[in-house]
Amino acid sequence: MALRITVIGTGYLGATHAAAMAELGFEVLGLDVVPEKIEMLSAGRVPMYEPGLEELLHKHVEGLPGSTGRLRFTMDYEEVGAFGDVHFVCTNTPQKHGEYACDMSYVNSAFASLAPHLKSDALVVGKSTVPVGSAARLKQLLADQAPEGVELAWNPEFLREGFAVQDTLHPDRLVAGVESERAEKILREVYATPIAEGAPFVVTDFPTAELVKTAANSFLATKLSFINAMAEVCEAADGDVVKLAEAIGYDERIGAKYLRAGIGFGGGCLPKDIRAFMARAGELGADQALTFLREVDSINMRRRGHMVELAREALGDAGFLGKRVAVLGATFKPDSDDVRDSPALNVAGQIHLQGGQVTVYDPKGMANARRVFPTLGYADSALDAVRGADIVLHLTEWREFRDLDPAELGGVVAQRLILDGRNALDSATWREAGWTFRAMGRPKA
Ligand SMILES: NC(=O)c1ccc[n+]([C@@H]2O[C@H](COP(=O)([O-])OP(=O)(O)OC[C@H]3O[C@@H](n4cnc5c(N)ncnc54)[C@H](O)[C@@H]3O)[C@@H](O)[C@H]2O)c1
Image 1 (spheres, helix red, strand yellow):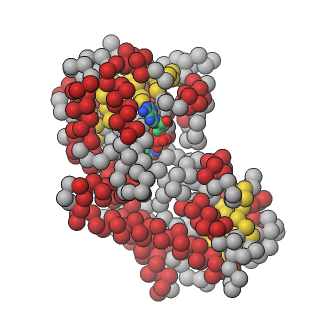
Image 2: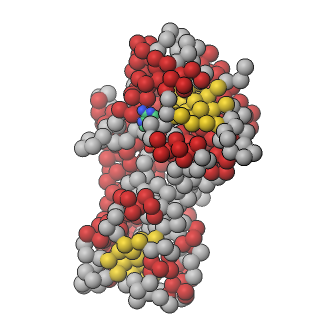
Image 3: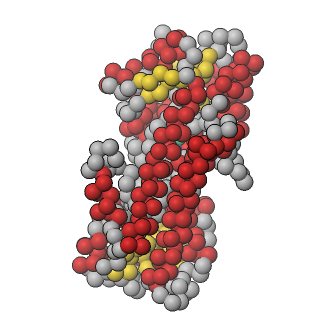
């Protein structure tokens, strides 16, 4: 009989995973502890913005017209335990308040709630990003609290927000931390379609599976901070970091991706993951191995302050006082509504606190941004945001912003002054339309 799948925690990762599993042909039951999420998902609505996800829900959520009916949602752990053969745990693992370490309470709670209800041949699969050693501990929790025979596997997730559906259905690799052939066989069955498409399937032990995820994120963070460090040097030496990135990116050993200098990385993953990694390495006595991540983090965090400084400098002596500042972008990256640890909002907030009159516009992140920073001004379009502005800051590289007409915007601002915090706009077009255009790590020209 076909495997029945459950997904515990239906946030950015879990909601996508649940819908993707239904798309792959499985019967799926998703569980969350937030009633509003379950209501929305059950009605085929996505509690966040993720391209293609709503369509997938409509295609599969039980009770919707024309759906396959393979996907439904609940808040009942007993129902989930009775239903599932394979349970994916996708709960959040945020940074602990006041320290670098990972807060495992949501994962612990999900495991503890699930364990007593499991069938004896169930496979529990951890997907959340966790400190190395967590799987060994959770295996013990299952041994203590679940029926005999229940097994654990660790299957970290590499999806990118904004491409989550595509990445889940067509992953560039799958990692399976397993302790038995049976667990491996079950995961191979779950992922039979992407494996048949050619996705590499890497089988490891628990600690390696956990480490693959944090190592991958640490590498990406390091690459971004590397190019941002080069941007600092370019600014000091009057060089151009965009040209530099292009030139070094042609070297296949380096690669052109993840080499765009700007206001740095943010979001619900990279910053907290590298910090949790450092904290865990410290516990393991391997802290020296990761001291470089402290520098990666601090290069990244000072980009935000640097952007504020560049804006103040561009505005002249009076700084932000009484000045209207238009901020284009609130989310931590384009094609998402996620504002968790968003550099764009951080910059907007700092300028607001320094007396600037900030107006933010973002194509999808407005509701979340308003919740996090209710005191900022908000506009319903880029044109409205820049109306009367003394300076425009481009802080999230949405396509909509790349397509803006500098002449049209130039007609409504108080001053044609723009700072590109993402090195994503075409400087020549803006300058031709009479704008003073500045960007991070590039000559003033
Ligand atoms: N978002 C991403 O792009 C991404 C990518 C790869 C890995 N991850 C990792 O996946 C995990 C989840 O991330 P996310 O961005 O989806 O977080 P999220 O906050 O969007 O979703 C987590 C969900 O879990 C639910 N939850 C919390 N406690 C629960 C419990 N005890 N039982 C059931 N549900 C519970 C929450 O209500 C929420 O809906 C994290 O470990 C993250 O690091 C995320």
